[in-house]
Length: 210
Image 1 (cartoon, rainbow, N blue to C red):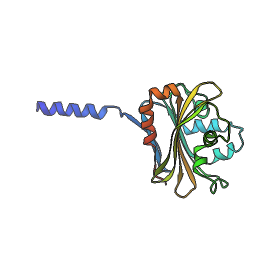
Image 2: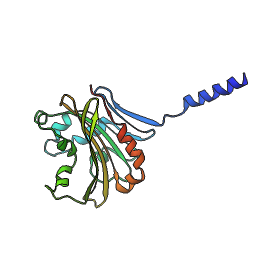
Image 3: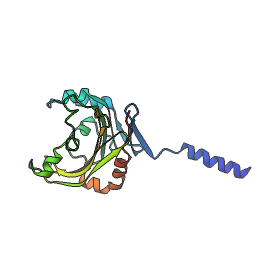
Image 4: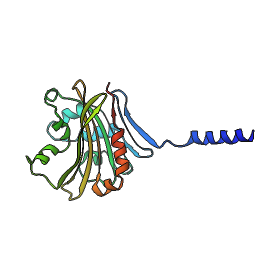
């Protein structure tokens, strides 16, 4: 009886333990990724409000086509402004986004355009556009059940003078109507210190599709 009581006590303690991962999911569109539990969550509502303030060409149309977006970071003071800015963060920002393609994008989407979603990476790499301090450390095809695309890791020095590492995965759905994106950003020094954990987040990105 005493042994059973001990075993039951262990089982109860195990059941109360906090999960080691936080799964961030878009169930409707079939996508998810995992981060360490306890990280600060930035909601789709907050991101949408911030995105609506952009005056960039085509921003309103892209915002209207967003199906889902959420962000997670260990830094509790980060907001949607930090997520959608290119300012170099001193702690990781993990941002997932799913949106429908606009009519003029459906027939023109390519691996290059998937790679260039936030910055002109392809043009920097081939010299078409003069780049800042820039380097690609990984660039490969990324195939999932729900689509295929590219996984790119690059470093660049922005206008703030700080080196930033971006780990970006962009996937085009099998029916060519939707793009799924996971962006992990951090200063290069921060990224290198947390590289193993951040790469685990990147590899957890799963696109099953609708």
